[in-house]
Length: 114
Length: 116
Image (cartoon, rainbow over all chains, first blue to last red; front, side):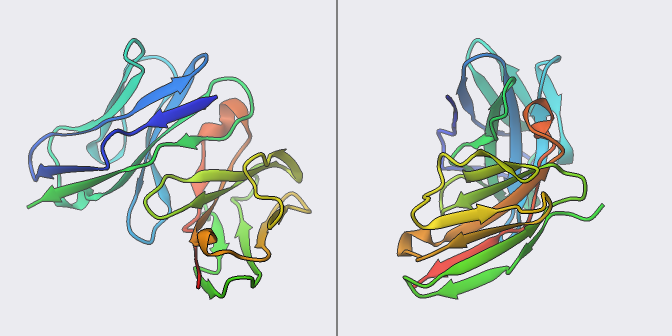
C-alpha cells in the first residue's frame, strides 16, 4: 500500500515570509514523491518531484522540497511567499516499482496575506 | 503540445439520471487515468488504462460507474444512476507509460459534476 498524509488543512503566511507545507509518506520500497498545485477551477499543475539523487529538489515558481528518508517526509518550501502562491497544494506518492497510479494526500490550502 | 482535453466543464443532473464525461489525452500517451476529487479531499483514482486495457479499477464503484477506452486514445467515464455523493470534480490525466514513467502526468481541467 502507498499513502501520504498532509497534517495541515490550511497554512497561513505573510507575504515575503518563508513557507512550509508538510507531507509525510508511507510506502514499502523506494518512493517517488510529487507536489502539485491547484488553482480555483483549474486542473492539477506539477510543481516538482523526487525520484532519486539529491534530497533537496527544486521546482517551478521558486518552490523546493526536501526528501527526508528517516522521517519519511517531503515538505514543500519557499523562501519568500507571494500572494499569488495562494492555492491548494497536494503531495502525492508512487512506489518505484510496479504500475500503480499516483496516490494523493488530502491537500493543504495555502493562504498568503499581503 | 496540446494538453489533456475534457468535456463538459460543468454538468448539473438530478439524482438517478445518467451522465458521461469525455477525455482526450495527450497524443502518444499510453496511460490514462480518471480521478474523482470530492470537495475538500485529494483526488482518488477511479480507473487506470494502459492503451485500451484496464490496469486498475479496484476503486471504481462498478455498480454505477463504467469507463472505456476502446481505441486506446480517448476515454469516456459514465455514471448511471447518479447519487448525490457523486458530486465532485472528475479529473482525467495521461502519462507516457506506467511504472517508472508514470511521473510524467498531465491533468485536464476536470469536469465539475453537481447532482441535485
